[in-house]
Amino acid sequence: MATASKTPPGADPKQLERTGTVREIGSQAVWSLSSCKPGFGVDQLRDDNLETYWQSDGSQPHLVNIQFRRKTTVKMLCIYADFKSDESYTPSKISVRVGNNFHNLQEIRQLELVEPSGWIHVPLLDIVNNPIRTFMIQIAVLANHQNGRDTHMRQIKVYTPVEESSVGKFPRCTTVDFMMYRTIR
Image (cartoon, rainbow, N blue to C red; front, side):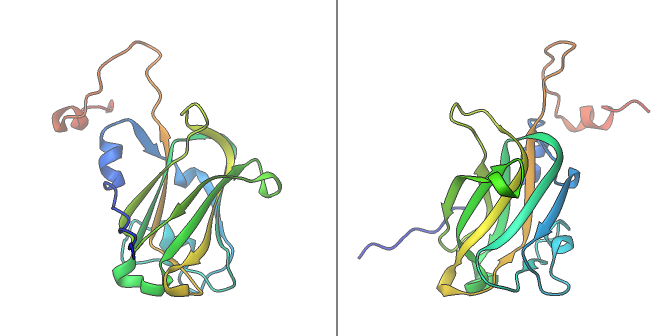
C-alpha cells in the first residue's frame, strides 16, 4: 500500500517580496467568508500572525472570497496551513476559482494537500503561463483531513508581479544599503 507523501512547504512569502519580483495586494481587495466563529474571521486571516486563524462554522465547501475593485493581475496565492496544530481542521482538498463575479467563477486549480505544514504556493497562471487578470478569486475548502467538518486557515497572501520600469531597464537593487535609500525623503 503506497502512502501519499506530505505536501512540501514553500518559501516564506516575505522572501519573495524582498526579491522585488512580486508585491502583496491583499489589502486592495474586499475579503468575505462563507462562515466563521466569532473572533476567528478575516481579521485573523490577514493579521500576519501564524498563531491566529480563520475558523469556519458551517457546512462545506468553506469559502474565502477575494474581490478587487478593478480587474487585477494576480500571479500567486500563498496559503499557510499547519497540520500539526490544526489536525482535522486542516484542509486536504482546495479549489481555486477566478472570474468577474460570483456567477461566472471557473476553477483554475485544485490542490490535494497531505499534512501541510507551512506556506503553500499556488501559481495563478493562464494557458500560456501569464499571470491571470481577474476581478475575483474564490478559495473553496472541499475537504479536510480526517473528515473534519470545519476548517482552519492561518494566513492567505495574494501577489501581483512587479512591473518593469518604463523609463529604462535598470537592474533590481535589493541590497540592504540600496533599500535604505530607495525612497526620496
